[in-house]
Length: 91
Image 1 (cartoon, rainbow, N blue to C red):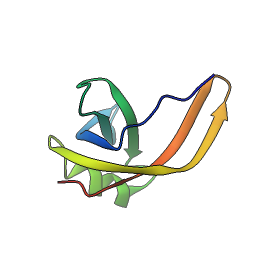
Image 2 (image 1 turned 45 degrees about the vertical axis):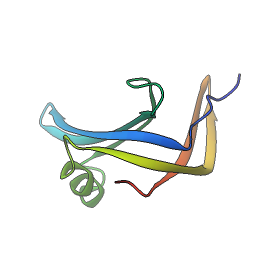
Image 3 (image 1 turned 90 degrees about the vertical axis):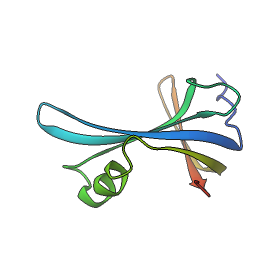
């Protein structure tokens, strides 16, 4: 199994919502050359981390171009590979 290559430049968007009264905000990013093919996703739930949720939710509906740094750590669980990247210089 091989991890998908993450580009150095991505476009990110933020969406916020609620499921069963529980609020969340999700950051999704895709390669600038492949719109809509989301490579990076990060969700913050209000109940788990109110500060991180609020910081992300206030950006809901916005789009950014960002740089992606190298993976800080990678975990493998079954057939799922999860890598943790630094996203910088969003504008």
